[in-house]
Image (tube, rainbow, N blue to C red; front, side, top):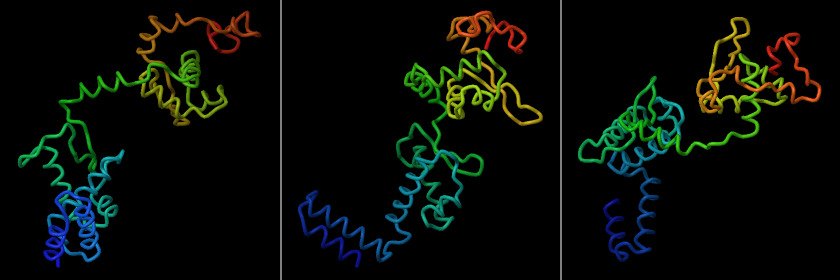
Amino acid sequence: MTDDVHRTSRGSAEPGGADEVDDARAVEQELRASGVGAGSGDAAAALDRQLEAILMIADQPQSLVALAAAVGAPVPDVERAVRRLVADFDGIAGTVRRGFELREVGGGWRFYVRPELDTVVEQFVEAERPARLSQAALETLAVVAYKQPITRSQIAAIRAVNVDGVVRTLVARGLIEESFTDSETGAINYVTSGLLLQQLGINSLDELPLISPLLEDGAGGFGQTEGIPDGRV
């Protein structure tokens, strides 16, 4: 049946014409519906494309079992498909070696930039990274700078909003970092990083300006009575 369908398709329209495209789509749909070609090169290529698409958007390594469940294929077939993708991306058998690789990490598979290209990718990311912080990020950064070490819950209490996302952003930017974990509560305490000092052009946090004189009720500073040295709020 497959040969008859292909012969009809080739003889029904001009090469590359709209009719030929429609015929090709009809053939593909018929093959899918009938199961013809199972285990063939076409079926293997289709499985490869499905796995490639899933792995392209996965943010965590995917096990063979998880991939097999996602595409509805036996695990051995998925394993062979993954090996084909690895060989393809690595430039084996005449294919072009890609700038990324499919790597097995922690019992799963995920795309990674090739180690030799880390530098150029890092430069690109740094160039594309927005230079300005949002108002929320600036406010959170100020709280950490003046009250460190401080936990996320303490920051949230001061700002009266959820700060989880903002804290992650500041950590990703390298402006704050984890200092230690409270032994009783398990809460992570954050402090500012050396990068922040560089960005501010100061040598130490002692050079941060006092903010209590800027407050309507704090012209004289809070001093040690509030547990805040030098009136830093």
